[in-house]
Length: 308
Ligand code: 13P
Ligand code: SF4
Image (cartoon, rainbow, N blue to C red; front, side, top):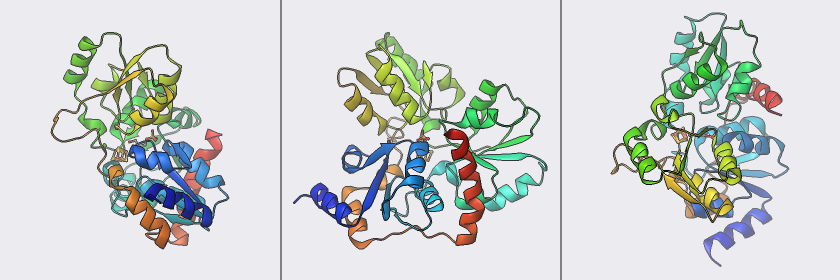
């Protein structure tokens, strides 16, 4: 039996569900029960009847699954799979920052630690951020964190110019080169540009469609265009190519072409071998203090209620 077959056998025996984010490598996406964006995966984690959730993604995603299903065993094959964006805002610094903004509602992107979620009123993901902000009364004062690019994108869409934005960013999405995207557009004049809202404004201006990973995938399926330049992490190209084999997907290049920046190094830490060992040994497991779970849960549940 090869590794994938061993994983299929084990997950059935153990009543385990394998969730994979779109940014995982193709071999991981292929063995997953569900492949999705961060919102879809958190919804599945909240409703699964499996005994074990094995999360092929990064730490904050597995933590969100644990917060939503505290009685289940949640496994993450690589504990070092973090997120540069989540790391750009820690709970201690946030506590100090928020002292300057009393009476503000704290809206946090789900790419945050449990400690930050415990200080948050309502979470959002890239697929529901605009909806979450628009669900709040017009005169409500808002602090948005940690992504400055998503924050300024939401500000421009909702026209709520007084939103206070934390100065954080993702190392992958900040690195796309405007010049190289323009060069690609000259080479492929019919191509449409798809961009994740974590990209800089200078990239978003070039985009035909801005959206979460799931929204970009959906657009690429439905749109009549045959060529797309994709400004988000490269893993998404796998599902785009499966859904539309006749179309061409071109990854948007990073500024420094030697750095492999359109790969998220954290997402790519998950390998089939690690998935197999994790499932076999039921470790590394996500463990979170129950008090912290209760504090962080409210902000995620509020998001899920609005996103239904
Ligand atoms: P999605 O919410 O689109 O899945 O994005 C998550 C993420 O980490 C983007 O970098
Ligand atoms: Fe975090 Fe960026 Fe990786 Fe997404 S792509 S998980 S935001 S580091």
